[in-house]
Image 1 (spheres, rainbow, N blue to C red):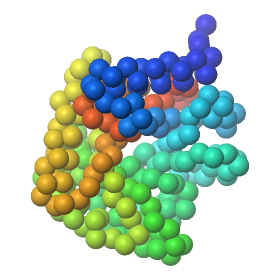
Image 2 (cartoon, rainbow, N blue to C red; image 1 turned 30 degrees about the vertical axis):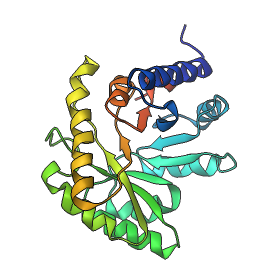
Image 3 (cartoon, rainbow, N blue to C red; image 1 turned 180 degrees about the horizontal axis):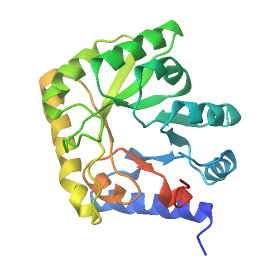
Length: 230
C-alpha cells in the first residue's frame, strides 16, 4: 500500500535535510519545488496541508486553471517546462519564477510582457550540459553572453541557472552534470559580476546527489505524488 501523501512529503524533506548535512550545508538553503504536472487540485491541497509552498508546472494552460483554483493559498508557482515566446504574456502573470529561459529573444519577450503589467519576474537560465538535442537549454559556451543580456533587462531578475541531465538508473551518473553546472556558475559569476545564487537541479531519483553538488531548488514530482498518470 502506498504511503499517504503527508508521509511522502515528510520522507522527502528528511532526505533533503540529510543530504544537506552530509555536504555541510544549511537545510534552509534548499527548497523543494513540488512538480504538479497532471496532479489534480485536491492532491495539491494535500501537499499544501503537508507543508509544501512552492509548486512547479510544465505547461501554461494546465497551470492556469490550478493557479486560479488555489489562489486563496499562500503558495508560489514556478514554471519549469519549455516556454514558447507566445506564452510569455501568460507566464509573467502566473509565475513567481521561470526556470527555463534559454535565449535572449525569449528573455526580451518576457521582459516586455512583465513591464506591461508592472511586474519584475525572477528567472533562471537553462543550460544544456549534455548536448542532447531532445533537451532545451543554452550551450555552455553561449551562457556568458546570455547572462550579460538577461542581466541588462529591467523587468527580469536573473537569480541563477537550471539544468536537466540525462537520466541514469544510478543517480551517481548525474553527479558530473550537477558539478559542472555549479562550476560553470562560479566561472560566469567571476567573469560577469552577476550573482547567480540559485541552482535548480535534481529530481525525484537524483535530488540528493544534486544537493550534495550545490542545488538550491530541487524539482520533485513522483517522490511526492507517486507515479504520474499518463
